[in-house]
Length: 113
Length: 111
Image (cartoon, rainbow over all chains, first blue to last red; front, side, top):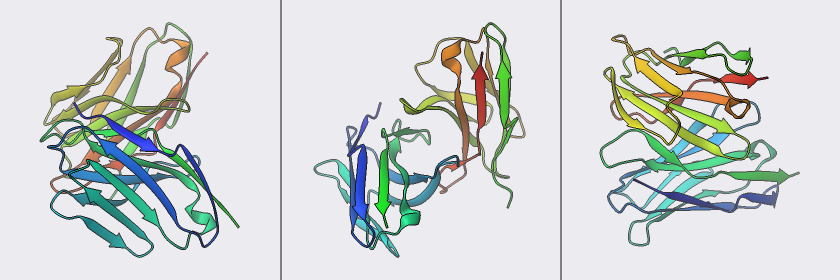
């Protein structure tokens, strides 16, 4: 099965700076990599995802990059705002062809105003 | 469309009791997965159901069980509750081509 490692566990940035969170995965056959944002007391919400046939995907201030050779993918948040403060989780399919996801351990992002 | 609905939102149970949690997926979604979330352990996978069949099971003891009905609604059951079972239990559903959408969760407290 897939194993996902996520770093760093905590990240503090100043408002307006960029934030980068990195994840590595173990199964070279994995083909789908979502990122979830969980605000305090709320459910995890999908913010962006990438499939293995592309190397980068952007959505406004958020981007995800994928390096299949190195088996890692990263979340990039530019021009951070206080409302970006949350826990972010990366994920990958638990097994090839399955929908169930295995999650990274999470990164607590704090954006200082 | 309506989101993933989990009931109840909060539960307080006594050690040794059993509990059943319910999850109604987004209409048309046939895949339902359950996760346990605790502060120190992140999101731990419990099980995945698709068309009433369990396709994956995580590393939890046999006290944790689940099922899925023909309308894709799912239930999970925990028997002989222990203090360590206190957690937020999240259900997520997925349809063809969609990512996972999580419900708001059931917060279980075992006393």
